[in-house]
Image (tube, rainbow, N blue to C red; front, side):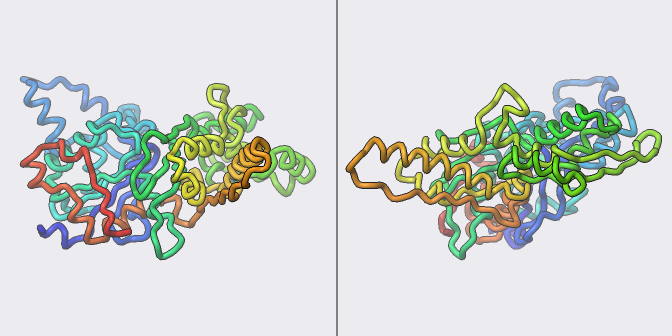
Length: 430
């Protein structure tokens, strides 16, 4: 085993909205940055003298040349794009999948050298991917990591499996369950049995954290709140993170707000970005209407109207019959958009209603037959669920089995990028 195994592995969880990065063994990531790249248009649009296909390849893929390019990532990228029109934003990941590999490579470069400040040749890497990622995407990832950054070893883990590993509540890590991963740009419901994803039963819905933000922005605009247009999305995002909660009954919640507005309506104060003048606005119904889009999506869009509890139930019902009880018993939440107060309680209640209604209907048809045992429904909520995927990666990359499961630089040079298509689940841990 090479010297890279003696140092902690680098764990990077690339999400649609945010990227979490740090070193294996830590409880929380060292850095959390928006997954965005700001590139200088004036530099990129300059004509290149004597440009050839080969020189263009070098310009895009050589880390030394890329270090000289004028680009920023994360919060710095967002601020640069606001202050200067020469910078354009690109989001490398869309709906959980890498959409722009050039920007992704630049993003990784800044993550490794500017944030983590480590030499990639001295560390094994654990990267994450969506459960619906194509095998070709893993090959591209392997090429960039081994060719550009010359890392000694790479493991590409499926995000729901890591979230499941992070969500255990006993000393035994239970690797059978359903992961409800609600991020900023994508929501996936993924059943996992003994550490392996049941691919045919994966469900995906087009409502995620960014849609909650847009809905809150829309509600505040329709009510006539005086929020500067250029600042409205950012204000809506902060309102979502600071004040939103999940209610048990939407009608009762409206009545509570109407009876005691002083108790429930909050004030938001800010300054206009252009003039610096102060402004304030009320935060009312959107406090509970924002998260409600997961349970009654028709209030936000007519394109998708299936509630999240129903999607989870369909996901489990489409899984092999001998796994269903274990799946209902271990529904694990993952992602920042599951952090709303009472989200897990509402989800568990609604799924339990669906399951109980099905059991009653079944018993009504089978009069005189033996009654089935009640199905236990349990939604697991834990303090680390915001960083569940990253924390799961940190736990797995801290074990000796991790280094033996990694694809090494030598294997890559011998067999090529196709080795990255499969990443074994090292069962010695569980």
